Length: 263
Image (cartoon, rainbow, N blue to C red; front, side, top):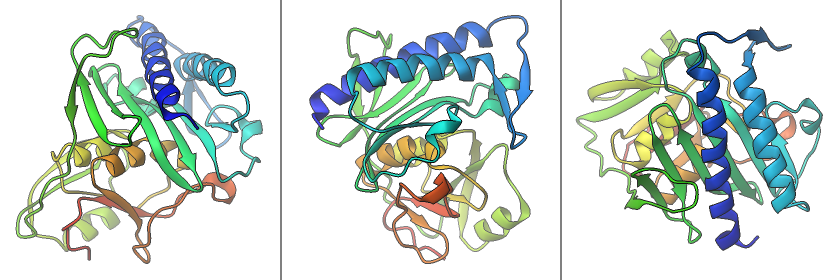
């Protein structure tokens, strides 16, 4: 894969998908339907999915494409692929909380090596440069011109006073019990893959997820965090989280800055 071609394409597609999402988000009303797994889906999910899929298939016709909204893609198995969640955090979108993102990642041999996370309502754009390092882009977020880039680097954690980020929509007692094992300075909550990005920027030290996620939920945020020096490990044995698993389900995991003494 030519990353000099890949990353500008992913960035532009994420921004374009964000425009389509915001058109619907800012409308007076929109329909919400339930998928077969009872998760919500809106016209914004579908519009963003169609836009990104068309762009990726045109630019990279020989690369396997996995998206949340296209059920026929889920049976595919490949070690190298593009994976998309066109609207991560649909519940936040429906409740107009703004914590939703567009996630696009490239997975190579089971590792999310490049990715883009765009939160259109918050105007925050995180991506990995062609060299694999991560940045947050600021400014107008123009599709044709890259703005100012802030290099991302995870925190140097103080294990006596950790900053924790947890899910806004999926917080439960098991998560609280696990967090209770640490000396916590403060906690924040966020939706979608923004939690990975808060660890990548150093705004948080650790993000534990003791709940169901799919690979398209996490791959782009995982790539951004890796590019900032962080890592995502399985909750059960603390081995590195891998991608391309049968069924696309993730195990429970912990995203963190190196130096956090995991419990």
